[in-house]
Length: 225
Image (cartoon, rainbow, N blue to C red; front, side, top):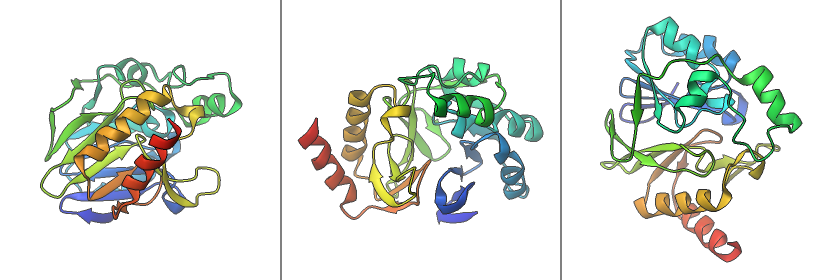
């Protein structure tokens, strides 16, 4: 695991930071794909983890949730809107085209078993030293997590920092193929921009130490929206 800031650690689950999860305080945020469980459990074996939280219940974030919660005997928290997906393990039905070959691949090979949700989260709730920020669009119940003292944002897939095909680094919205509502997703990016984050951690892509990149993306989105 790589230390990003005080009590914030990134665990890259696939090469080039293409799928990430995070440990913040005593909380595991996201859990990669189904085959990520062993790597995550090994990485957190010496960590005190009391809770597992999802930014959203897509297959590349909830894939190992069931295995990890059972292995570590910890509860799962999601937004109210993501609860049904997390509990059922059916994670692609909100995609614009759930019959697409990539969507079906994700459901068959990446998605994990469902896991009961012990608590649902909403805007403003505390999650360790972070605060819940509702950032829907990529999924209907997507959450991000913001820490005011160092302006650090766990963005999930509200933003990504790589091209998912080429793995070239760059800040953008996630692909439309996996995004429920693009216009809502853009509004969530504007909400994130208003927080003025200094450090942004992504589900996909390396950590960004913001030096105007987010402002440039917002300008670009304003031009095309």
